[in-house]
Image (cartoon, rainbow, N blue to C red; front, side):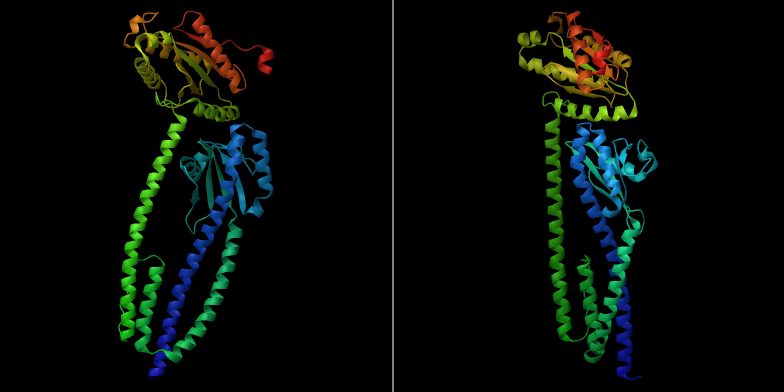
Length: 438
């Protein structure tokens, strides 16, 4: 076989192998890019829905949420979704575009939903080539309200991928035919393989493999080119590593700053407990969740008895320390699921989830006794001979169907404890028929 025939055979085989490998890589890359672009667009759409959804949740506008999900269901195919569902922090379906999703415990049935509600940012899964492709976006405004989860239209995505594959294959075949003719006319064995080595190295570098290096043998010009490419790759590798380290450092600093800002906005600086702002947000979401689930919850209003006498007698620094000690006692005596917040100077509020008023009375008595038995400094100088608290208890739905009515009932019960001599726990009386209906 002559040199020309061998050159034709070698170039043809080399180009064929290179084309097959490159086309396979491009097809796989294109598939990942198409899936990523589609899921990114879907995440952007859900992110656009998250702010109005958080407003509706905050205001308890359940009907508007259902209407919005109904409109999305009608347009789901146009938007590229097969289903969109809104789940709360427990993974329970609050609303959805598909029938039969309301009330389903999706976190227990679907691992992706469990991951989505536990992740503080948008989530996309699964990696290719697995299906179905889904995205989730948190619904939050200061605190996490719920999570939007969308399932993308698999048939539509695959059809788009197939069209792209055909275009890529046709384009690659056309370019390869022209390239083969040019190479057969101009290149020789002494030039082809060194240059091919350099090209493969450049492609690996372009794809992010910074360890790739060219090893060209042949013409001096090609050796010089390979050396230059290797020097550039070494320099770029060092720059990339330094840039990645700097980005990671800045990202960590920003995340910690955001966490500090969020904590400052939602906590009381003196006691470290939640503040009224956090409590208002929690109550608004809880009343919606509890109303749907049909489970009760209770509220306790607590007030430190004769705190002004303690403050005036021993000074504000000791009064502040008394408040901090009281906050620690309350936190230690309550469950991890309960929420305690400082809502005034010496006034605190406790939210007991899944707790009827009768059970809340037992917890209130436990708190009262713990405070009364604690050896606070100068407690014996208080009017009652020790530091004490008064507590008012009310519950939903026993004392009202709205948050304001439950809080008002608990506050009135607190005043009743004060009027009865302090250092006691009082359960709010059931509201009258007319008041309850209002």
